[in-house]
Length: 294
Image 1 (tube, rainbow, N blue to C red):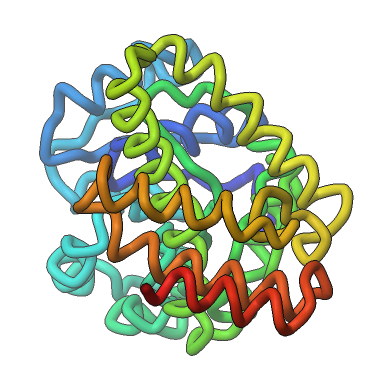
Image 2 (cartoon, rainbow, N blue to C red):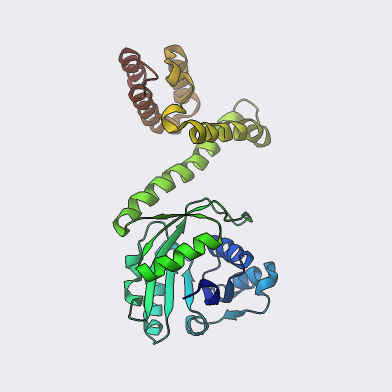
């Protein structure tokens, strides 16, 4: 079935639903209805986009399903099973429909109650950090997808329309995939937050810290992108600077005690990476590990 002929409904108009609806509307796809437990949130999305001014804000799942052929479940992971159970009562009709969720952790198997000879299911996760303020295009976003072949075909069309990049995986790969994405994205933000707090101890306010640190973070990502992660490590561990590492460890214990235990493990992981990729010799790695353990 041609993607542009499908009526698209959204269950959930949170951060991901709002971002996807904005991008799908920009790609001239037909969004036909919205449903949210908070109708005001759905109306806010409708008001943001001229293309959505005349669509329906549904008071029930049944109303949305009746008007839609491609249904996005853009809701929190912990709500999926409950909503799928409610949809299962409505899903089995002779009309061809596709059900798609955007969870990074759950595979399409959680949508099994919605499968029938007339329905196909898919998981489609945008591998990016999405906030309420995110008005960026989906172009070049990586979308990780898996599910029924017919639904995957539709998913690939969606990614193509959004000018994204498709990565097809197997259902059993989803949890590890999402763990990696969450570790990288979430803990980068958490680390940044902790460093901003650390800088407050020397009189550097949040605005100044951002001015200092954002270019550092961007240049680090650029190094990874251009040189590969194996060749992107810089700093005292990569140089084998024992005295500097010793000083850093002492400062962490003195100035950021809650941070100290977590940082001990990160120091060890970084020493291992530096040794494995030839930054430092084994004797320097051993001395660094000894510093961390003391």
